[in-house]
Image (cartoon, rainbow, N blue to C red; front, top):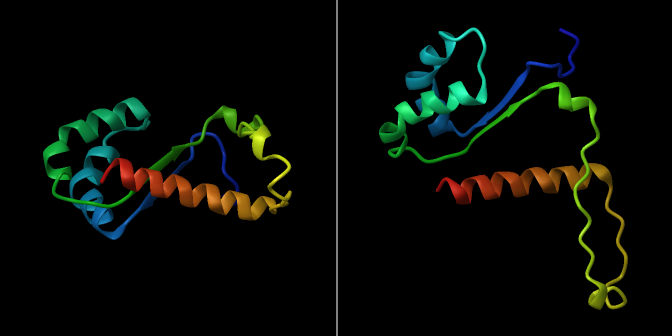
Length: 113
């Protein structure tokens, strides 16, 4: 209980409709497994595919593993034709992370809509 993420932790983000579905249909199935892996979760979700079609929302799950200690770098995209026309803008790391999270949630919504 250090307040920090460690190996084996899971982070889950749910909208209200998906939370209700998760609580009523999936929670008991997931509790039966001592270790939850993406493969097991995929099998559980495939079993409830028809029920899931009746709900809409966001289900975002992150599995924390040993790769957490490695640095993660997003590729830099350079547009040489626009280099001189666009002024250089520095964005704080926190703002970039918030924008990245919003984009991930938006893409997740659009994919699973």
